Amino acid sequence: MSDTVTPSASPYRIGITGIGAVSAVGPDVPAFGEALKTPGRVFVPNNRFDLDFEVVVGLARPDWFAPSDHPELESPTGNLCLAAAGECVTQARRRGGAPPDGLIVGTSTGGQSCSEAVMFSLLDGTPPPEYDYKAQGCIAGPSRLLARQLEIVGPVHTVSTACTSSANAIALGAMWIRSGRCRRVLAGGGDALCHTTITSFHALELTGSKMCTPFAPDRPGLTLGEGAGFLMLERLDDVLADGRKPLAHFLGAGMSSDAHHMTAPPKDGNGAVLAMERALEAAGLTTEDVAHINAHGTGTRLNDDAEARAIHHLFGDRLPVTSCKGLIGHTLGGAGGLEAVATVLSLVEGRTFESLGTTSIDAECPIAVVPPGGTTLEGASVILSNSFAFGGNNCTLVFRGLGKNR
Image 1 (cartoon, rainbow, N blue to C red):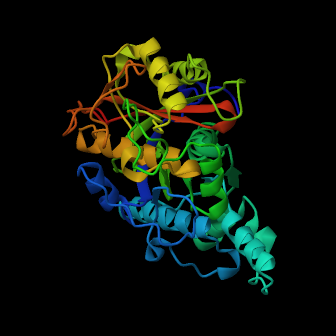
Image 2: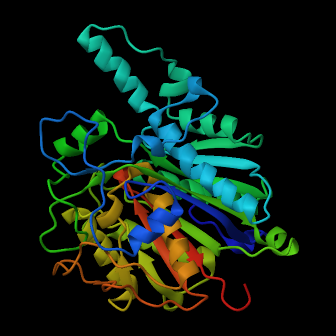
């Protein structure tokens, strides 16, 4: 994957013509959008996992996992992604668009829940459930399920770069369109939670027994959530030629690698700075063009400090910054997709969403967060959406509202 997605490399501009989201606060985009505007905790209680430690976990309700016609390909992550992807495709079709001719799914767990269920059965000495690793347990399982159920006959790809997976999927989707490989790409991703994921983050001492408060001085740690978010990326010229109107514009992306540590960013946030700089370069913009940043903002001390320093390095403290994770938790491979959906909703509604749960800022985080009630955006405002991951993988996406000239 190249470092930037540059508009000038191809004549194809990109519009976003559909969005889909499932998270711990609701089964679709309207529920997600309403929760973003409504302070409060609306998590489903942790009633699915038997854990021997106290932790806050955001779960999707069982009926929010979309059923399919292909049970032999199903997994919790796959069915969660199918719910969000199906909503995205449906919205794009209702707005006059055609089906996607390419699919990219980002996930960090894939069919791990299915493999885990088999492992627990074997450890208990009971017959394991019927299970096909190649179809259900592998990392590409959700991609296969979505391609089959949604009848996508173009190229299908899986991205697994931990918590940047769905952000990188969206960046790659833009590359496919600008290279002429596809005209409409369904891109995003998600993760359902399982014992392995929750206990692994607990072993790293990253989770807390209270809801996360990104950038706050007394933040208790990361809150895990499950969810999925997808965008329909489409050649803007095709959209306008059909007399349709996109929801927002996708301008570019920037990627980088910290080359520092497997689970911790460098204190100065240099990798995050590089991703944001490359994203702005790809979009043909400067720091002065940016109106808002949707931060990765996990609520952990190391990540928040490094990201805040990176933002301050480029923008000072003039920009209102927000994080969705105080509402939905950290959805791992789905984080970039869900935060991209939140960014599009901000541009459509002309308002930023407040950073829920964060009422004051740590002295080590030299930024300003969005105040209660949000702030007003102009029609053609530019928003950056940051995603950072274990392994030092960083991705920044750039979106713009329609403005007067679409």
